[in-house]
Image 1 (cartoon, one colour):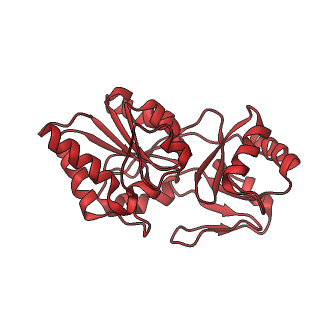
Image 2 (tube, helix red, strand yellow):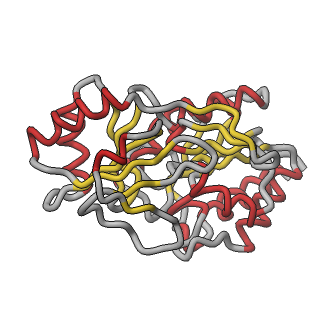
Image 3 (cartoon, helix red, strand yellow):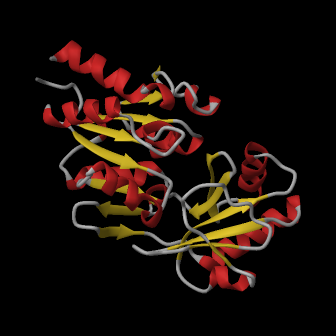
Length: 269
């Protein structure tokens, strides 16, 4: 059986994962068929490694994963961090002061670098319900006391899109700002995207952008779609991503990845 792409890149939340944080049997089987046909599968997620590892282990996933919005390339089979890019904390602090000068006080959380990096949550930051561990920091200075790969920001009144837009306008070229999911606006190192991390991981496998089929659901997937040969947005995707996708599949709840992979396997089988 042949498959027209050598690399399938999938976002995690809202894409590969259903809303209950599981991967359906149908999607697992479609990905297994694709890899049996000779393609590589790389998970590309905004989550840092500590928030991704348990999902990869549950999937029996032993390949490369791009984590932390592209900051980390992780070898799941070896439980090893291959590359890791950190956020300049001084620049991030300056950028945040510029954002707060425009929109008022922000609530912050910070993702620490490393295989076991904790997510520290500052006063007033609303943590989403779920299994992902976070450590509450009473003293905001704690957030800055160790190397970070990203800072999360929230505003008491602005919605995600408005906050991301205002922050992007305020920070200039100090850092990047991305909206990665509901309630998730992030400050990242300048120039860091899922595409930069994915290109590094692909290069390790001897693969290129022209070999790649990518799936996603949020604005942080836009650079990955621009890099890949073909970008497929989920039905539940943000409108900004749908606008640049070559195809829109069914939702993450309705096996959107499997729908596309099965069709391609059938067409080229």
